[in-house]
Image 1 (cartoon, helix red, strand yellow):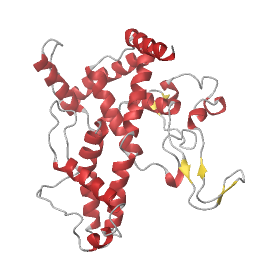
Image 2 (spheres, helix red, strand yellow):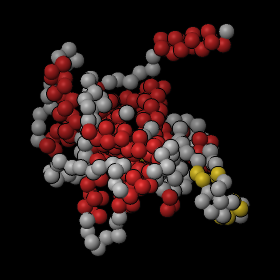
Image 3 (tube, helix red, strand yellow):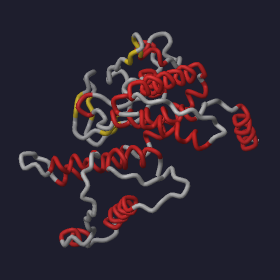
Image 4 (cartoon, rainbow, N blue to C red):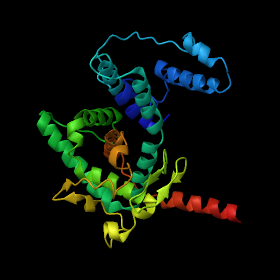
Length: 309
């Protein structure tokens, strides 16, 4: 379980928190249900009677003891399915849930790791981001008409209160004002992207190349992110400013910046992924100063040299 599982997938998607960031990981029925679903899927590969069990509804049980109104993504889709005029089915709901669980599992954490690395290796970018977050916090405090809590790193109580106060200032709308943070994440995705695609049926690519069903079309977005004819002579440089115009983020063409694919098959979780990454980085950079440790680098080099030797 990772950050995006708890905050992104479970809290935003399903309306629950499993507390994976707590010192003592608490037991949670949602996590147990997720593990049970995994077991059921695995057993279907070795139990020839699974179709009978499914027909008799003995594979699993649905239960709910919470009648509170929820505003998470899953609850909204369930409400949509209860509308008789919609064509939403249990199968559609299942596909959406699987999309959340599978697609959101490791990708966001991997991208966040690269964002942290790029900040460590580009101190001037980190300083601009810290400055944006400081201004953001002050402006949001004025909007909410509250005074920021004074704290020091030595006083853990006031420090935690200040962090919690900053967290409450991070809303869906206010995160949209963090243009430089959005640019940092997007530039990282340009330099370190992901994912190949399969072929479902025979097709002809725009350059008249014929592809057959069952094959695999593999392109290299990593190389595309470094091509000068796409990004100019500074393509090899890490420069978040390329995404900004007069301080505001400019959305790139998804056919040029392909981290989330493009066209009718564009990633459904793009906005959710950006939201999670911006939340995580805003909190991380508010609490910590990210720096590259030459001591840690030297220790890694020593280990590599000992292995080679």
